[in-house]
Amino acid sequence: MPFTNSRINHIRQALSNWYEIHKRDLPWRDIKDTYKIWISEIILQQTRVNQGHNYYIRFIKRFPDIKSLAEADEQEVLKYWQGLGYYSRARNLHKTAQIILQKYNGSFPTTFKEIISLPGIGEYTASAICSFSYNQPYATVDGNIFRVLSRLFAIDTPIDTTIGKKEFNEIAQQLLDKRNPGLHNQSIMEFGAIYCIPKNPDCINCVLKEFCKAYNLEIAHQLPVKIGKTKVTNRYFNYFFVKQGDYTFLRKRTKKDIWLNLYEFPLLETDKAADLNEILKSEFLVELSGNKNIEIEGPVTSFRHILSHQVINAVFYTINIMTPENTDLENYQKIRLEDLKRFPVSRLTEMFLEKTHI
Ligand code: SF4
Image (spheres, rainbow, N blue to C red):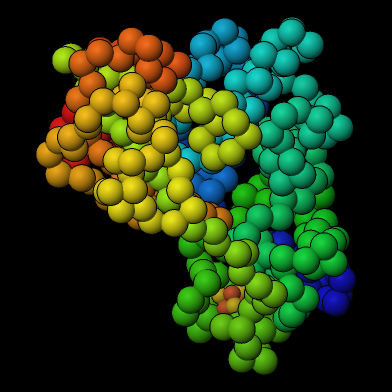
């Protein structure tokens, strides 16, 4: 640790004083209910607090405890998650609730080792649960904390490297106030989330400016350092909203890919953007329609849907097929149009349904 004990104590104290005055009033704050802390932490991974707040309220209302979540149908859990993205989080929540019900008799385990062995719980979430709920001395290190630590100690080791992660974890653990780890972790996370922000932090009025090496060296804006952006892949999805009177056809995504276990319309994925002629002649549509003449109904709807590592260039075609027998449509679930809303779908499909008022 590059600072003396007395400076470290000053930093801890300044952070917790700041937190007591400025912390946001959030439903998962100042509670000890491990189940609710866990749910909030999983929702807040990759999700902004504003968006996560409403999901949290709805989720807890429907699944107030381990038992209700464990005994729910996965499809319903996914439906409550719809729009939040990163659906493996919801599937793992469900799986973990079932494990806790069976293996721990419905009580959340209390040791770091047991908690981190559960599906969907990594080092950060296990540390958050152990410190917030049980006041155990585990430092949390999330994106906000990387930023605060890199600036406070002027560390330019890239945060997206193994060596950087190890270094920041060690510093976070040394800075942790072992007498009150829960409060300490929440203070520094909140400070990073709303004060020591990525762009133009208000350093002049900062309670830590006296201790902040980056401020004193005037390099706060250069930190933290990241080595590179992840490569983004373009994908081309052609969806067919097939109508047969009051019915349509859906299929559950079962391959290891985005949106596992969510439902979708028949999908033809192509290597590049395909034009209407190619689509109409494609083997996929021939098999889907039973080699009938297909006409595209109404306007074709396109979306460019951006995920963390993929851009989905999607086109939705609406077609009528009145005789789905002996066609590939037999491999799909035939459902009433009015029942579409009961199925968990990706945000992309949800946007199509909203745009076309289905
Ligand atoms: S002085 Fe600026 S860079 Fe340093 S901790 Fe405060 S807000 Fe962050």
